[in-house]
Every structure is written in structure tokens, then in C-alpha cells.
Amino acid sequence: MSSNRELTMSSYVGIGVGLMLIVGIEVILTYQHLPTRTLLFSLLCLASLEGFVAIMYLMHVKYERPILFWTIFPATLFVLLLLCYLWPDAIRMATMRLLK
Amino acid sequence: MDQSSVAATTHHDVVMEPSPYAIEKKKLGMWVFIVSDACTFGAFLFAYGYMRVGAPVWGTPFEFSSILNGVVMTAVLLSSSLTMLASVRAAQAGAKASAMKWLGVTMLLGGIFAALHLREWFKLIGEGWRLFHNPTGGAAQFGATFFSVTGLHLSHVVSGVIALAFIARGYQRDRYDASHVETVGLYWHFVDLVWMFVFPLMYLMNAR
Figure (cartoon, each protein chain N blue to C red):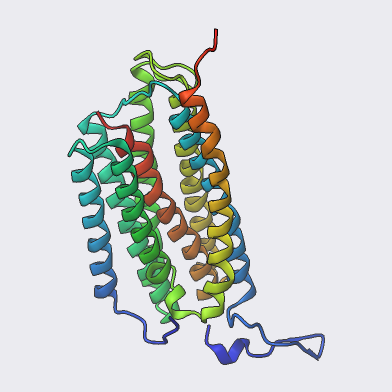
């Protein structure tokens, strides 16, 4: 993870073009009329990939000490995953029916 | 900043223990802020997901023209991240004029992004979308979630442009150095990072 050899500016432009290509794939997937869950999963995977590249290269985490990554990201991810406790209630609302 | 310069710091003639992160305090502070802000955006996006899953009928207001507008906004913001990188590199190389030029371009791109964002907002408002009103008869919460999530992001973009202007002014007057440009750049990249999640979840998932 930690490396002192930074990329050249043209390499960063290449990363930017790559990120735009991922956005293009997201738009194409949107118009394939996929089931909502499949589309959501696909978009989240692609967005996470974009986010990872942005964090590592644009935000330079790749060139910092690994301890920075291991201090920040597992804890942030854990907090965000904890928010998943909301889903059962959301699904309950969607399937809720009046008993009488 | 190189590792040796932060290996040990002195304060009132006392040698302090070196930072395990080998980065400056202001940069570490920015990372802590970014983590807290990521949790804020995460909570907003989860709230949107909760309401969307829970609603029996959800609105899909975005025609292809709006999606295209979103793609252009993404390209503008991504380009601004690259110009920000160019500015940081120039500042670290001591090329002040070049750093100032790229900071100016980054601010301009941030302004264009905000203008495109507001154009989309006014279009939706013109169609009758409000915080608690859905003109198509679907869930009223769409407006609340869309305007709050994108509004929070827009406020970050505007704050970023103001912060860039503030740092650029100080950098030009030699009050700030390259590390300040790098730190504000970190914030700018974070704003870009958040958009990478907001665009697919708020726009693409609501395309007609």
C-alpha cells in the first residue's frame, strides 16, 4: 500500500478517464431495465470501485503509511454497515398490510 | 511533507513523540473531518434507502436529459479533482503561478458544477416537485430525500469553493504554504468521492 513513487500527471488523467468510463457503464446498466435489486447491487459495486480508486490515488492514501488506512477505513465501514439495522423495518413497512 | 520533517516535533523546547501517521496535524484533522462527514452522508443515503424500500410507489422523475446533465456534472467534478491535483503538485514544486492558475480553474469548475446542479433543481421545482409533494402521485418523500441529499452535497461544493478561495488568497500572500493547498485538496477530492455515490443512487436509480 505504501509507496513513495507517485504517479505522473498523465497517469492521473488516465485514472480520471477510467472513472468516467465506469460512470458510462453505470448509465448503460440503468437503461438495461434490470430488476431494481440487481441494478442497485451493480451500481453500488461500481460506485464502491470508483470510491476505492479515488481514495487510494486522488486522495493519496496509497502513498501514506498503511496505518492511516487501517485506522480510518475499517472503522468508517463498520459505522456505515451498522446502519443496515434499518433495513428490516423498511421491508416491514413495505409489506405491512391492514389486519382489519 | 517528507517523513523526516514530522519524525519529531518540538513544542516549548520539549521533544514530542513522532506521529505514527507521518502526516501533518492539519492533514490528520482533515481526515478525521472526512470520516465524520462520510458518516453524515452515509446516514442521509441510508435514510433515502429506508424510505424508498418502505414506500409502495416511488417516483422516477429523471428523463434522459437529466441523466445526461448528471453525467456532465460528474465529468466537471472529476475534472476539478484533476486540476486540484495539478495545483497541489505545482505548489509542492514551488511553482506558485501555476498552482494559483490550477486553483482558479478548480474553483471555476466547482462553480459550473453548482450552476448545473441548481439548473436541475429549478427544472424539478418547475415540474411541481417539492420537499413534501410528488406531482406524479407517488411517494411524497422523494422530494425530501432528493433535495436534502443533493442539497447537502451542493453545500459542500459551495463551501469547498469558498475554502479554495480563502486558501488561494493566503497562499498568494505567503501566509499559507503547499501543505495548506494539499489539505484543502483532500476535502475537494472527498466532495468528488461523495458524488460518485450520490449520482448513481439519487439519479440513476430514479431514471425513467
